[in-house]
Amino acid sequence: MSFRLAQRLQGLPQPATIAMSAKARALKAQGVDVISLALGEPDFPSPPEAVEAAYQAGLRGDTKYPPVGGQPALKAAVAKKFLDENGLHYAPEEILIGNGGKQLIYNAFAATIDPGDEVIVPAPYWVSYPIIAQMMGGVPVSVICHEEDRFRLKAEALRDAITPRTRWLVLNFPNNPSGAILERDDLEAIADVLRDAPHVLVMADEIYEHLTFDGKTHASLACVAPDLKDRILTINGMAKAYAMTGWRVGFCGGPAPLIKAMTSIQSNATSGICTLAQAGAVAALATPAAGRDAMRDVYQARRDLVVARLRSMPHVTCAMPEGAFYAFPGIAGALGRKSAAGRVIVDDVAFAEALLEEAHVSVVPGSAFGQTGHIRLSVAASDALLIEACTRLERFLLTLA
Ligand code: PLP
Image 1: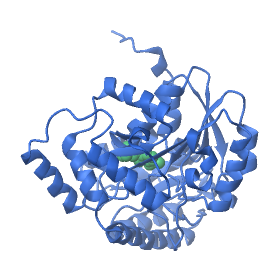
Image 2: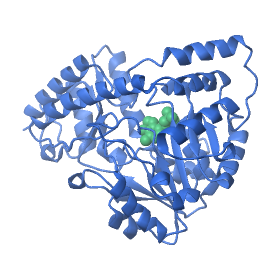
Image 3: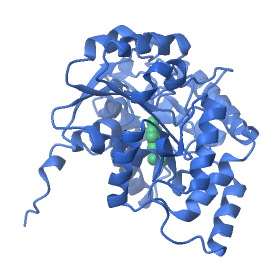
């Protein structure tokens, strides 16, 4: 029997990040020693302060339905974080807590996108933006950020992509998957373009803000261009900076009418966020920055290790990621070649599949992020695993004929 699903699901791509990890899991189940560098998940434990606070909240009986938009204590902690770390003042009615940053993206698009509205997504992009936009009837418009521009969004490219139907610009820097960051002058140039396009909302997804390397720091668009703040949604969360992916706590600041509409969607979807997780998030946000910085330093050292290895391999180029915890090497030099098992590497998907099947390393093809000819590998893994993965990758590349 064929099961009828809603039309809006038709033609939606399966996120390749999930597809690749399913394949890797299947191989592992057969006893194959697969190294998975496909998922973007910190390999550190969550702060013990968060675990303790969640436990205490449970013992206290903080187990009833929460206020839909977030516990007052967490909203206050988020307001303080935005002010102290981003120079942004958000009142409680301008803040929303969500089930991870992802639900906030979903809420925002659900609240604002009408069929045919365009969403500019600089590529390479995190897989979920275009998929969620499409689910709402929107049309993702990809703007390529080139490797020679260090994968930064150029203001001229943005200007060319804006049309009267543009509803959103998604600005995710530090970027997943490229690790690119935007500096103040990049943001100022982008703000100038946005001043000429008052119908465009901006989703500044800053979830990797604390993961910037080599002493570089992150700047928030809403702080660099305060005159645009009433059409910027600044999204962030606990997952990456605090190694709290499973807690599912994200937060955002934005114009009150948008936050109100997003809250109403959340009310009907989830009734709010797990009270214990919110208590944990309050405690984590109060921990000293040194904990985050220590994790960042480890990611930076791993980035150095992996990029040095990648740059010494045949058929590979690799821009230096300036943030986040991924490398996004180009593998164009491998295309058209044949693997030891006779697979023709026609594109990055074939490359990732052959690498998994023959060298047992799981990565994500760049086309999943809107940019072919690349693969993404996560450096959120131990040095030993990264070294072994690089050795396998190199061996695989050396056998390509
Ligand atoms: N934004 C980006 C760029 C991400 O890479 C991710 C997770 O991978 C998210 C948002 C979602 O994070 P969360 O776990 O808070 O939903």
